[in-house]
Image 1 (spheres, rainbow, N blue to C red):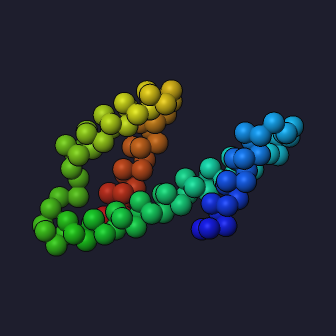
Image 2: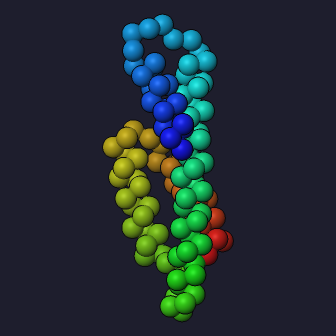
Image 3: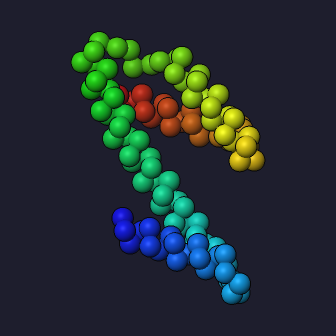
Length: 104
């Protein structure tokens, strides 16, 4: 993990410096971001498993439409601030939520 953070920092420094960049520099940055996304998805999966156990123990439903609605609203607000495509963000999170429910 430390190597990953260090490689990401070096890659970012290269991108913001005044030295001339080649396409491989940008691809390397994309690769680091993609790896970060995968690691975050893995962490989310592990948390979903733990939540599933807790819900089962407490006799709670897997699906919580109220929570999902709040999450989607918050994501839409953040995606708007970041200038992201709301439709794309919703499609991605619908898949992530679906997977989380399956993990639970």
